[in-house]
Every structure is written in structure tokens, then in C-alpha cells.
Image 1 (cartoon, rainbow, N blue to C red):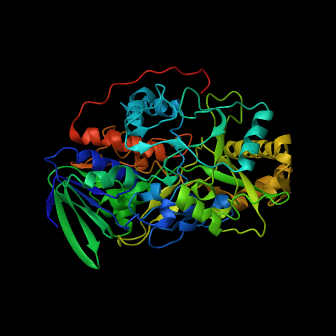
Image 2 (cartoon, rainbow, N blue to C red):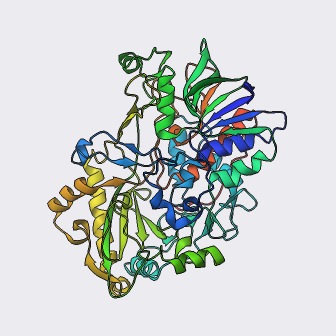
Image 3 (cartoon, one colour):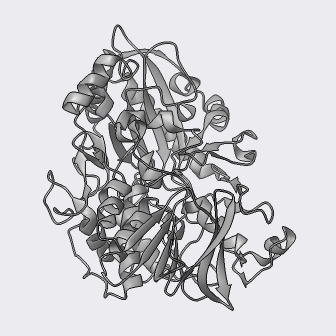
Length: 540
């Protein structure tokens, strides 16, 4: 391996793959990508329905756990994160939801110049290859196939019909003119298989031969000469090595990894760094602060009669069908439909995402149930609670201390309880009655507010969307500027969802791709793509 490159990208996750691929389009640029995990060529990655089986597998999952969470009954919460080429795009539910236009306009209003909805929309479109929707919000010809699922279970159709029967809006495109409403989820799949960032971006870039990828490499710190980043130190096969960069070092290690690596490199809250044995280089309190996540509450129900849902998806006949035809249950993303809803009609945009699954989606799949079930899950997508990511000591191989602090505000609990009520109404609707048997959890059955609140704190999980821990903002409020340059140093940028000033109203995979596209243009010194003006409804 060469010892000097133009750029080093730390992390081959969703955003890192995009950054590396786009930088590699410059033929005279040498790009090195360092990834702690290994190959993504695995059946449990390619087969969409297998993603829950990945959690806790040391080969591909960082398998973080939080500190005891006071707002959640003192529980430690499992937090899977991809440690594999493609990162979390290799182990998520493949949902492609950009969020709400007001999210990005809010970023820009708060000082993130260049990040308004009309300014980021062209970057969403540049990645996209959408053969089903061809309006001004979508595009054809990009590396990332965005499509609807090839398979929907009968109960999923019934759940949508149930929502619509209650007067809730139909919405065929959450990424279009309006986010609110219920419909099918758009997915990052190609021909009934998962399309992750490694397949869509990184692997084609390797053909150009100026992009080098090294796997099973854990970066331990960023190297500086004064305040200029000049390379990285990493561990491979038990040996410590160094490599230099003549241009930007790009940190794409995710909402947990990026702040932890900055802190181990001396950038972060100086008082905490000194206390754990790290010599501070730049005092940036925002590094590791402001962690945001979407709280998740699941309402499972047993199926009535012989309906199986995804309970029998591992049967040989379903696997053979997928291998031969690339459809059927194994092609399901498990979370097959969704809706976005306002818990308070006066809100300008949805604050709740309702998820429909023909499976038992409780405690990250860890809770088994003896009979087939389906689940209506409630994700609160407009949280204000903030947590943190802080290193424990000077050992860069030790996982950081993570605290979500979810549901720390009463209005968040109120919104989730309102959404649980809606979910129960959908389950009780006429179209769903033919499928619904006994409730398989207290959230599915109780209507007592005090009882529901206690149960919510006992079982609440997250939606796999940690973000905002290296957020865009001033040196007093943030960690990077709108060009994603780390405050107080040179030649160091961060490009992943940790830079989001606030979490978006929806799944964070689509924004991760967009951030990669925009970051690559910044690093290459290119003019931003021209803002795209599109119609919007008064209520988004």
C-alpha cells in the first residue's frame, strides 16, 4: 500500500462510499478508503428480508449499547451500526425517505448556508435512478436504484386500506410534493436484492484504479502537523501503521464513530478529553453532543387464522423462489408500508411516522413470539431530546459511551401516545379485522394513559437513526462549518449524518447519500448544483 494519497476517506459506509466514488471521478486524484469491517458479499446482506438476522454479528455489526437510560427505565439499548462495506446501507430496511422540506429550510435558517431544500434537492436527484416516478422531485440515470418493493404481504395492503378508511390521506410519494399521508415505502433495491452504497457507488469506482479500499482497518487517530490534518494512524492485524494525505482527510465513520475519532484526535470538549487522558488540540464542545434519534414504539398483533406474514419466510420454498425469481417474501424489506402524520393538526409538518410490518418487530428482533404476528410501529420523527457520544478513556479501540436521553420531554411522550392511539384505531379498522387476532403486547391492548406511559418507557427502542453529533454550526454551537470543515483545523472534513444540524423527519439513509454527493463537490472545489424550485403544499 502506498504511504501517501490525495484524500483519505475514513469509513466505507453510506456516505463514505459516495464521497470516495465521486472523488475518484478525477483521474489524477488518488483516494484511499479505510474500512474497519470486511466484504459486503454476503447472503444476509443481499437478501432484503434477512437484515434483522445481522444484528449482533461481530463480523458486520459494531453492536453498540448505550449507557443505562434514565428516561427508559435504566435500560441499556442495543444500537446496531454497520461494520462492513456499505455501512448501515448493508443492514438497514432500505427505506428511502428524504425527510421533510422544512427540515432543510430549518438548517439553512439556522446558519447552514447552502443546505436549504431547494439547494439539496439536486443532490438527491443526482444519486437517483427512479424508473417509477419521473417528476421534478426524482431523476433517472444515477447509481442508486430507488423503487417500490416487489412483494407486499396481504396484511400490508389491509393496513393501508385501514388507514385510508379512517380518512388518512393516500400518498404515493413521501419524497414528492407532500410528505404527509400513507402509502408504499420507496426502497434502495435492484431486481429484488438490496442495493447498498458499496454496490451502487464504491464497486464501480474501483474499476478506475485510482480508488483503493483497505478493509479490516480501524483508524485510531487523525495525524496533525500543528492544526493541519496530514494523515491517519490505524491498526491492521495488530500492527499500527500510518498513511499521509496531501489534501483533505474525510471522516465518514457515522454518528458514533466520527465524534469518537475526533475526540481521540484531540478535537472535542477539552475538559472531558483531558479528564480521560487525551491532550486537547481544539476545544469543540459540540463534538459528541446533540445526539438525536427517533424513539420507536411497537404494537404487535397475532394473526387470525392461518395467515403467516413473514413468520415462515425462512422456509425453503421462499428462499428458492427468491433465488430463482428475485421476488416473494425474501425480497420484502419487512417494513413494507408507512405513513407520516401530525399528532397535532396545528403542526406545519408530520411529527410521527407509522410503520406497517408483516413481522414481529420488537426489541430489534430479539423478542421471539410463538405464533405469527404483524406489527404497527410508531416512530416519533420530530424529537427535541438530545444525547451524547463521549469516549471513555484514551484507548481508541474501546467503544464510546452513548446516551440517547430519548423521551426526556413531555410533549414527545404525548405525541407518541397519540400515535399509539392512531395505531390501535388502524388495527381495529374494518380492513384489518380479517387479519387481527390477539394483541401481542401491552401497547397493542391498553387504553389507559398511565399504563401506556409506563409501558412506553419500559419497551421504547429507536429507529436506527442516530445523528447530529458533529453538527453544522458556528464554533460555539457546532463542530463543522457549512462546507463540512472541522472548526479550528485545516484539511479535515466530516461527511455523514453526524453533520446534520437537526434530525430529519424520516429515515436517514437518503440524507446520508445526499450529504455524500454534496460533500464530494465541496472537496473537489466545484460550484454547487443549481437550486431546484418545485411546488410545495402549504402543509408538508
